[in-house]
Image (cartoon, rainbow over the protein chains, first blue to last red):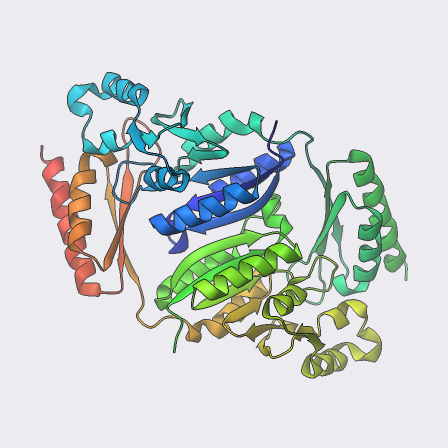
Amino acid sequence: MKHQTAAMLVIGNEVLSGRTREANAWLAAQKLFERGCKLAEIAIVPDVDSAIVATLNRLREQFDAVITSGGIGPTHDDITMESIARAFGVDLIEHKFIVQAMTEYFGNEGLNDGRRRMTRVPATASLIRCEKTIAPGVRIGNVYVLAGVPDIFASQLDSILDDFGTVPYQRREIEVALPESLFAAGLTEIQQQYTDVEIGSYPGRCGPDPCGKICLSSQNPEALQQATDDVRAMLKGFQHR
Amino acid sequence: MKHQTAAMLVIGNEVLSGRTREANAWLAAQKLFERGCKLAEIAIVPDVDSAIVATLNRLREQFDAVITSGGIGPTHDDITMESIARAFGVDLIEHKFIVQAMTEYFGNEGLNDGRRRMTRVPATASLIRCEKTIAPGVRIGNVYVLAGVPDIFASQLDSILDDFGTVPYQRREIEVALPESLFAAGLTEIQQQYTDVEIGSYPGRCGPDPCGKICLSSQNPEALQQATDDVRAMLKGFQHR
């Protein structure tokens, strides 16, 4: 059965210190929306074992699936595989297929300590391979452990997306040059009529001529179209005053 | 006493659906780093009361302070103030100063239901004003409730930053055109020598000529300089081989 809800767990000091702008959860959010899987939470935690273990265990209990990004490289700050093994209470093992692939690629001498580190995955995990790297991601239970480097993450994500969602979400946006407070009551009424349409209102820059957007999304195309028409009609009432 | 650790709680379906790329936590991460406050977690949750309440209560217990962004406007999806009041177990009240300011600005007739919504804040909260908007953010306990619109968030954030951090973090970056696995062991040794320096290694695009960065950060400038020198010396050993 495909996952209908998911959480994204981003692991990396570089995001929390403001060095790197998060990009992988941003990509996953877009892809999961297209697939019709609800991304219910994004958590960004440091390269700290206790934080990874606690957050992962909370999220994998709470949602159908968890996608992690980051911390699976060869350096000391790459602790994701150990932490995930600990979260699941399983051993970290050298995976013979990864050892074999690395030996073929780098030769016996090239399989240094750093690369050997990348051959270790939680026991019971299955591999998620992609063409961009020899070191694979893994799947264990309902958790998908992917790389932090954006182009590798993107490639690995593509290869797992078939597990997520059934009915794609669609979105409509309406530009609106009115203050939100003016149409808030009308929008609330429409939201209450359409329980399977999610309506959000996002103001633009503040100023004398506010121009924001009303955003509608749904897995039900007909309801989406009707709700969009209703919002447009409601707004028209104000513009003609 | 200033906050030494903080978490950021971003509230908004628009980020989880991939409509909007998160910008406020990204800004806060940079500003807190400069101030010397450790941003220990970023959580992004939907406009859902139970998610906001549970996440806020976890984070405010776990860290010195929490900064929230989003959900304080006039529309039906803006539920942050109610949820925060519920998390603290206090009533939501019409704040007389906000009512007064809004009445002055919009006139009695302009104070419609939407705007009246924005006058309600958790009892016991104090106001965080900024020039960009009449509707203020609030502080309650160790929680700072700020707007989601990026320029308003930025302005409100600036006004509270003096509460955060004591000794600024500094950062050094070293470009490195070597595969991470080659210097991973050397980097681990240096990391072990400098307990107050955080060292991360971030590969660039994968390919035959990897060019990544080693990133060092610390609140101790001398240790930072020494560790940086040690890393450079360690890398030089490889480049001359």
